[in-house]
Image 1 (cartoon, rainbow, N blue to C red):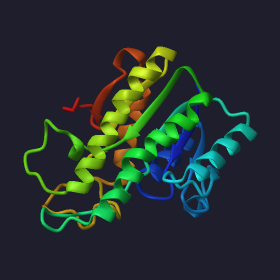
Image 2 (image 1 turned 90 degrees about the vertical axis):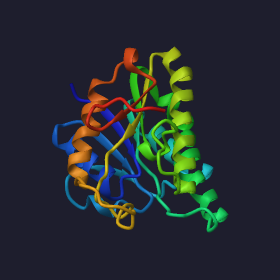
Image 3 (image 1 turned 120 degrees about the vertical axis):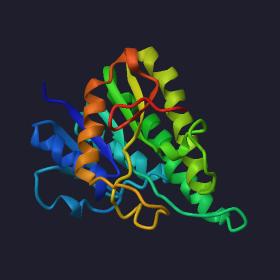
Image 4 (image 1 turned 180 degrees about the vertical axis):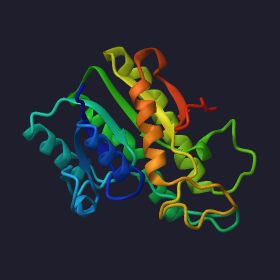
Length: 227
């Protein structure tokens, strides 16, 4: 069954791959991009540019664009995020605020703005990170990213409690260690996967999401993660 899907933060990387894969299976995709959608010069994906998730004005323009299309959304998948590295004693608090605005307030702002386009049976996915897990933090460091993603996890859980009352399922999603511009300076050695592989896993998690499983934190590979 064809779905109407909004993907936020789709300029490149994981979200770009998600849009192309969904379009290829004949879902109707709207890619909300920070830029002008130049990442979709091919593939037939509809784009809305200028969607800065830190800006109430920009998100309001997204809402206006959706309303002009008489949109009803089966999925909203919020992927927009940023990763910055820091260590204790060298924390850039301005950058920490920037990451909080994008990674934590961004998905909340978008979810609240897009809620009127969701009906019972719709789904909301927020791509966050295992790095934001309190129960899984065994190394410390990365203060800004960890704190902002922990906040995003709480946003997802709170949204579950509010939106599930309307029949809307919510999930927090970890994409895995993905080779993107975001992770190129990430410390340590990991077996990175490609954005297309992460996209397939995230789409599968959204496909299987239902109201009974709403309010979980899931790895793209299907594993349930600790909050």
